[in-house]
Image (cartoon, rainbow, N blue to C red; front, side, top):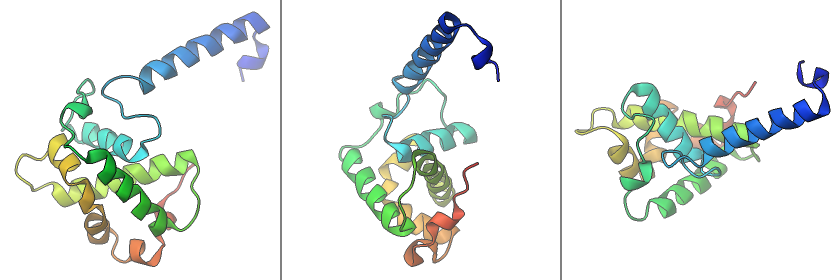
Length: 147
């Protein structure tokens, strides 16, 4: 590990640079708010699919009431997991859910960020299509693996 071999002032400089880089990533307009792991998963999945470029501001296409819809979905997911999740597990769940929702909506005309955000309330149906019975039985957490 390189950090312990650095002098204290060098360690401080590395910490400052890392803090700056992390803050710029987390406050970039195309990135969701830090605690919105579900929207983060959606953005990440759509970038992976090539349906969204990294600089696009997701807030500009989010429908009215999106924040309430995504909050309801996160509550549903917490019931479907039935165990407290740490931050890494939440982000992993967000990516898993985003992939299921994107697969579910892939044949929708105009598929992209706007369509996915407008249909975030269809997460329960999308999960059941991809992982039948897992959410209803509270076993959705079994699909999450964080290393």
